[in-house]
Amino acid sequence: MADELELLRHANPVPVDGPHFGEGPLDHRAERHLDRLLRERPTASASTASSTSEPALTASTTSAPSPPRRRTRSAWGLAATAVVAALVSALLFTDQTTAPAVAAPRPLLVRADSTPVPLSTLAERARAAAAGGTPKLRKGTHVQSWSLGMSDDEPPITLPEERVVRWHADDSHTEIVVATDPRHPDRPVLGGEGKLVEDGHVLSRQTYPPSWSDAPPQSPPPTDVAGLRAYLQEAAYSRTALNTGELLDTVATLLDTWTLGARESATLARLLAGTEGLRPLGQVTDRLGRRGQAYVYEGSGSRRMLIMDLVTGAVLGLETTFRTAEPEYGVKAGDVMSYRAWMR
Image 1: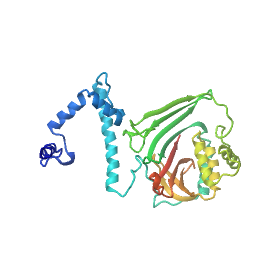
Image 2: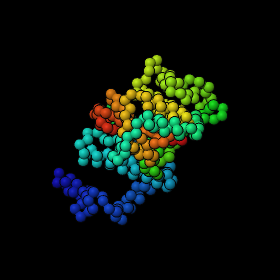
Image 3: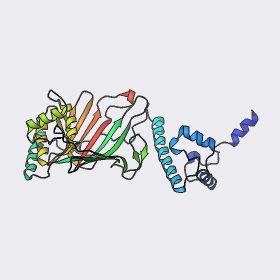
Image 4: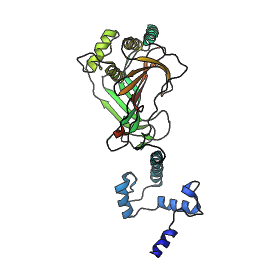
């Protein structure tokens, strides 16, 4: 036993006279060891161990990887380590029992010095702005979204994505989905499966064949309030009038299909002005840096905040937050469930 204890003392990874916790630059000995680990071909046992714990970092057993490939893997390994370290720190030094959502946006804050503008007033502004007739209605969309993913056995994660849909003359359309977070340009972001990917990484690119459907939301939205209300009800596949929460969800579906023109935005603003439960809060700056008026609807389990342009009444974004905590999923009251920002 004494010999074993002596061996353990000599193997102490943090000697008394050494730098504590690895803070500061590596010494020459550590640099040589790191360089050797990066350059040497792994043994069969090491490859087997890697395949069970870190499959993304497993090296080929037939030939050594080229230096550029190895350098890229090391960089992603450091990035992943940073994320894990942040999660561990949050668990060790806070009251949380589950890891926080990575890349999760904070709820938008209303400016304290702003004056709430009633939706009826904003609808009149939108009517005046539409007199010029521009911009025009266009099929297709450009939207930035943050969506929370939850499961029973994993902490929640927020996936930031940008989606562009363009329709062609033959009624086919192309959809491109990119992993990107405008709040942190040029930094790695979480991709479709919760893995770190490079900013701007294309998650999917697909072209769909021509579609001649004339059912909402594929058909152009009408420019009268009664017609638009019936259009949205049909788009929601509902036989009864939509409540405010359902209406806002269907508006999001409409904006995921069409980029509204001035007349359509004015019609939508007039429809929303006659909707119960939407109350004005004041001005906010959305996650793309645009200033708008915020209107809130408090549902049974969620809170929806609609952000509209100050002058044109165009819908800029829709934020949904949890009103109550769901500890089984690691979610607190006030956490952002989803956010969409529509662009032209």
